[in-house]
Length: 81
Image 1 (cartoon, rainbow, N blue to C red):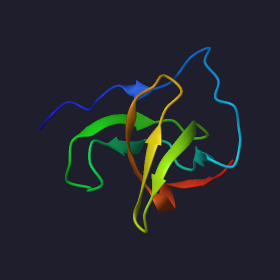
Image 2 (tube, rainbow, N blue to C red):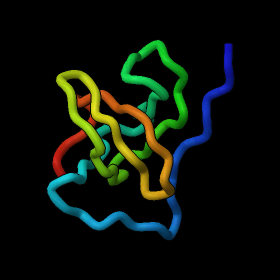
Image 3 (spheres, rainbow, N blue to C red):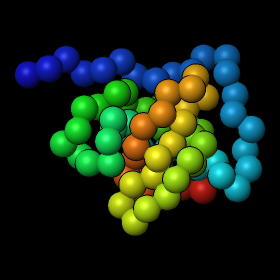
């Protein structure tokens, strides 16, 4: 079994909230490399982490973290900020 990727904590960094920002709803939400649950997990996100939405589709959001990492999260794993 592969080791879990590090959790993304973004200490000291902030993302300005706007209409293109969402908030992670659950502790340990995976940030996927591709819009597919079997793709590599880049990180596990903390609850309430803010993400900038780059692109939206029915099942996944292409997002960017405050530290610049881009990946995909399930649309049901986030809420509007």
